[in-house]
Length: 320
Image 1 (cartoon, rainbow, N blue to C red):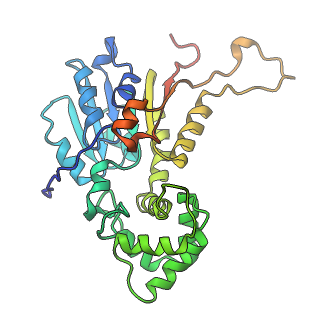
Image 2 (image 1 turned 90 degrees about the horizontal axis):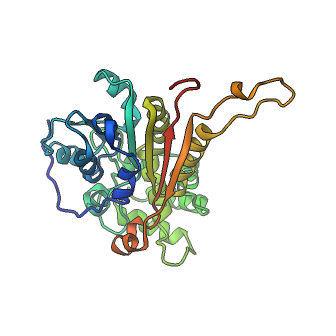
Image 3 (image 1 turned 45 degrees about the vertical axis):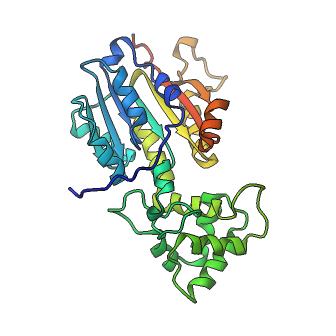
């Protein structure tokens, strides 16, 4: 396996206690099976392990090699890390003989170490190569995509994934600049965007939305999220919970709509003679929506946009 150096970038796990508390790891469930779909630097995983019983089991997932290297330092026989997206959790767990789990935690977005490491290319604030891949062993770097994408493709990604109203102007500027020189660094791209965007919300860098859009596209984050939510739901045992933290509106909207669709009670045609006992039942119940406290935001400003949503799998109709 490739050896990965671990840079000393501080990472504060957002909504640490709230997300793990929401899984309700207690009683018989303390010896259950849990999934941390986004290991990161292991904050949630370590807290989950501290609450598991001796027969409990935690399976973590992450695409980032540095996260995998951190996970491999956890010497706990109850823990296993998988180097892959949480979108593969159902097949990965099937390979391990697991058909149901007692809880799933997803902490979406990118971690502070990824943002702060200039070599990863996630941040417009630090000069570095335009890579942006969470898993540097797969896919193509952002610079390669920027060199080959059409103006229409650039505009669509920046508009749809960045919710950027100046997507047309930015795409046009990127195409114009790459005709003169390759776009290979973060500050280079940030400068192109700044020149194309003439106005921006107070306190927000002009490049924020464009960098978000390209990162989401390169890593297929929304596609992974859709697949991951469906697979997590399919794995949940009755009474098991899903705890999901999102950081931007696109993610949160998907999570909110997915959970709401599972908690929705389908209304039958009122003209049909259906007894109350035969009415369809919701598949999940919504448990909580939690935002970081004022002290947490003060200590970690990056947490201010976080939203935790929690839902619980309901038993099938007639089950006891």
